[in-house]
Length: 269
Ligand code: AP5
Image 1 (tube, rainbow, N blue to C red):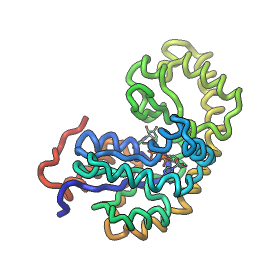
Image 2 (cartoon, rainbow, N blue to C red):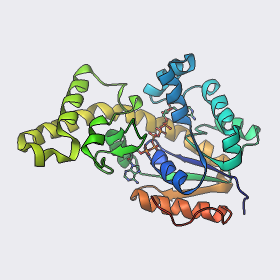
Image 3 (tube, protein in one colour):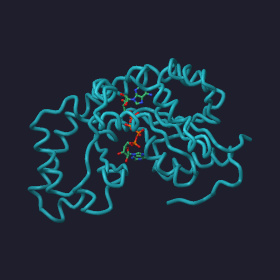
Image 4 (cartoon, helix red, strand yellow):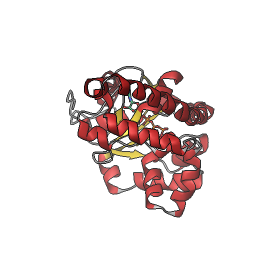
């Protein structure tokens, strides 16, 4: 058995549920969540030179260059909280060169978790994904809708889910329709004419989000085998095409197998 602190890598195609599972893992295991995508989005939001460069690649669904991401991840993993509590690394490494770079520093995980989800389901998930900017929680319009109208009204989309192909018309429809209708309360509150508008908005949204999601899937499938080859001996494949709670319980079993008994067992938020 590995000794604490536990070191975990979680991987999978775009929208396979890495971020969703990391939220649940962190609530149950006292690990420091390090997300390569979140580190990059923080740079983009801060408007740094690295952030500006990274955004060009992210909107195209491509990997950002190693000179931007590799040191960012290494430095975060070497910080005292991650060293003391253990870490949960999400979205890194995504290429052989990134895996080699982290192996060279001696940062090897105890387990490499791969979430497996079919491509058509992944596309559906990207199109419907929304974020709550206040709580930082991930939602899905169909699969994991927000609990209240207040949360629904403040949901946003990630720029790399939409920005590449979106025309101004899309933005207008999106803002008007989604904010007015408040998601799932459509028919009850507004009647059939709004239901029609809601359907049209969904179709427009699908049309403009699809190409971008496909590019990200393509980037993932070009690189994944080379990364898996490096972690083959510690690889655990998890079927991610099930309700998020079921996926989590399987991951939880894997982590409990590897942990000391000081890890809380059986708690689910
Ligand atoms: P990153 O932020 O890592 O994005 P990603 O890999 O595309 O993954 P996502 O965050 O899109 O999806 P996820 O797997 O976290 O799924 P989620 O839980 O949100 O990277 C973004 C970009 O940054 C990359 O494209 C690249 O340009 C750059 N980048 C990042 N790391 C890099 C690196 N190492 N090197 C170079 N460049 C890098 O779930 C998705 C949706 O599905 C949600 O709406 C959720 O509610 C729903 N959902 C989740 N689980 C379930 C379930 N079980 N059932 C139904 N719905 C579910």
